[in-house]
Amino acid sequence: MKTLLATLLVFIFLLSVDGQTSADLILINANIRTMDARAPRAEAIATRDGRIIAVGKTNDIRKLASDKTRVIDAGGKLVIPGFNDAHVHFTAIGNRFSHLALKDVRTKKEVLDRIAFYTSVLPRSRWLLGAGLSLRLDELPTLAEIDAVSAHNPLYIYFADNSSAFVNSAALRLAKIATTSPVISGQSAINVRRLVPIDYERNAAELAETASNYAASLGVTSVQDVHSDDLLGVLNTLAESGRLKTRVYECIGIHDRKKSIAAGLKAATGNAFVRGGCVKGFAGDTDEEIAELRRAIAESDKAGLQVMMHAIGARSNADVLDAFEKAIAANGQRDRRFRIEHAARMNANDIKRLSRFGIIASMQPHLFGAGSDDYRAIFDSKAFVAFGSDASITDFNPLFGIHAAVNSGSRSITVEEGVRAYTLGSAYAEFQEKEKGTLVVGKLADLVMLSDDIFTIDKHRIEKTHVVVTIVGGKLVFERK
Image (cartoon, rainbow, N blue to C red; front, side):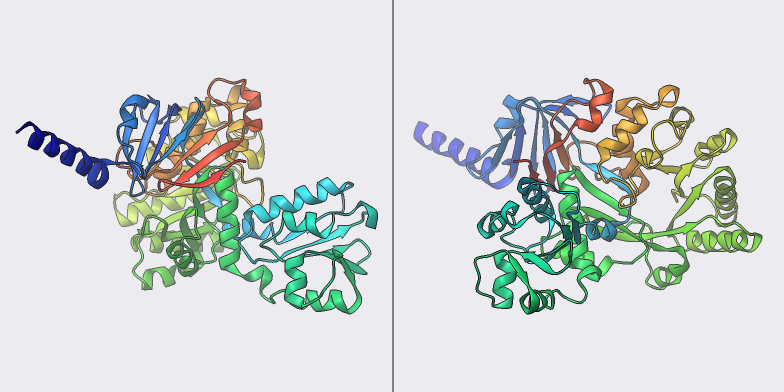
């Protein structure tokens, strides 16, 4: 009888661990800030099937491990929800890595470091082009050294005089050139250059994958793409093939709204990785432009699309707020989440109108610099705030934005407010606050580990902090080596 009972207990335990509650990934010994007011701190977190299944103490979470569970020891480092950039130009971020400028490099190490950085985010087999190299032949890396940092990407970099080029073995193999030198000229250089795809800088899939890889290195697990280029199909294909590491809310231009309306898209339509249903426009200057702005907003809103409007300056913000209010009056009350992109240099009376009508201020602190906007007044107004970068126009790093917002003198916000705006605030801005933005059971397992505790260090050092680990959907997508 005892043997039978023991066998039964073992069976129940194995069923629990291997079939139901065992974790795919566990993070232990961490300083977790969940950004959830009900349980703001924790030591460990467990994920399964892309979602959080437990948050608590290390000793308790360890019990969810099986022999198939990946366990990451955080060593006491800070862990927060993955950053959500509410305003990016996604393929433009990827295109920043299409060309490597080496005009200012002076040493072999600099050449290798620059190339290694670019190839760390480029998709396999994507070419790396460059120019401006001016080192002497005896100062250049060897072919073996260059291959060590570019094994999976054909390389072609012009020298400053454009008479010869610097290449790697991947490029030489494609051109069927047999040489042990990384320097080629004449017909050999022409033959290699001809192999670069004609659509190199317009290959949306490769550009988006590059941007996604770069996002992972910065702890950005979600973005809201306002580039207006309609990449829903491309992004879904990347996601299905496992090549997209970033969740994307893909917006189109408000002038193309009829396309989304005809397709029956509504705000935040899609899956966990790729969604659409948002349109973006710009504040007008003339009476005719303002009238068209109002028509476009009202029509898009009536169809159930989420409307985002670019506005910088007191008049532009006031015009957009007026148009939003007219659309609300015409189409009735509902959860529409109108957004003002930038909301920069808004006057005090219009700041009060934000919370009155539930309008989101989608702001980019690093774009305009510390002290450029009264973040304190906007947060005190109880308006919804989402932070982003406006990359590629400015740096994509969310820690730079938080740094700017908390170092704005009397206009500063707290670090917690800055992190919340870059996580839960941005999630709310895309109708996803029930899915992400805090580290609680049931939400998507998107989180980031930082090198320093930005809540306790000198706030002027926040921009020096870097990402150690990024996890998206319970999968490790970036680990600093």
